[in-house]
Picture 1 (spheres, rainbow, N blue to C red):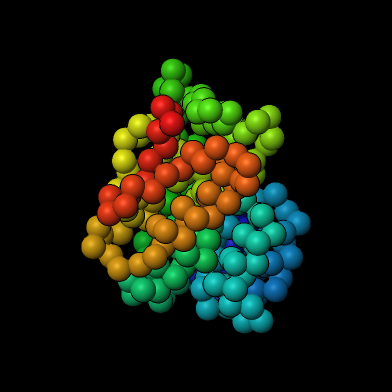
Picture 2: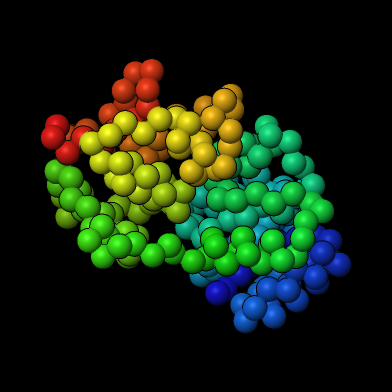
Length: 225
């Protein structure tokens, strides 16, 4: 995999870079947020490992800028800021995973590998068709009415969860646990915010709404509607 490490601490960058290189990954390093933004926007990286506290441009602002630019690389925050609200803020900015310093290099390597690896899907389940929407889980491709829809990895994962429970309500707690590993009673609008973003791309004006809110319960894609 091609990995971009955005880390201003030279020793941490060296240790992480060496560990990932030993796993046969191609690693580039940026020492500040602005340099990282330029490299991540231009280069086709599979995974970005980003320190939250960076000079010139902080990690949160960097990730938000990347997602606005529709950079779809998987993102892992590597940071000393580890409170639950900090983690939620990191996920809401557009990150896919969050690892708190100090950390074990073995865990970092495993998490990066997991982010870059697409989970295998049973052959019979790789393609979903609902109304005029087609979703290919193997190719990570979504089309509606023949129109290709570009989803960020986090948006695709949410759509995948809804489709794997086709015709059944997916609760907020299920989404919190499956997407972010957060406790069911976590107080945050992260689920609602991400569902809204997904809807903006899937259910455009004039389309038959596919993602429905079941008040007090959660969300559902119902093929019978």
